Image 1 (cartoon, one colour):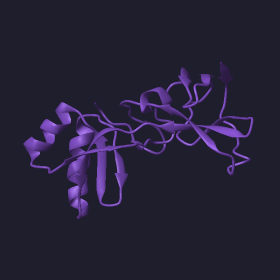
Image 2: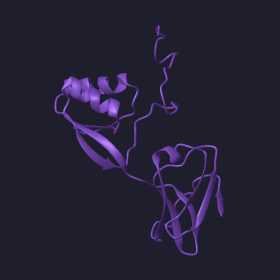
Image 3: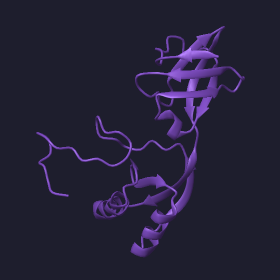
Length: 156
């Protein structure tokens, strides 16, 4: 097993790629094990999580690259900014992560979120894709509030 502590700079992108496929939840961790598509085993013990596209190793003319797996999602298309705001409020109120793209929002496929969309009359469709939720700088996965110079403190 190859033990990795940090992603490497990709100095030879022309070399063939062997994918190390990981779920989003595993990618968020700083300690994990996985096997590449060719069977090579990797252990990761790093100070920061790796991301989709990061290089883990370059050995014998191939590059071992992290590839995030696709997952079931809900997709909501919107046109006007007020539609985006309503959808964002519904998802954020339930503390789900989102990925915003031009004209659409992606969120995890979850029964509570489907029910909220249906109750609010928000049209959605099922999708399967790599999910890259937006994060504020320094924000860990899950719910949090920032207090300080950038955002005034508020009561909960």
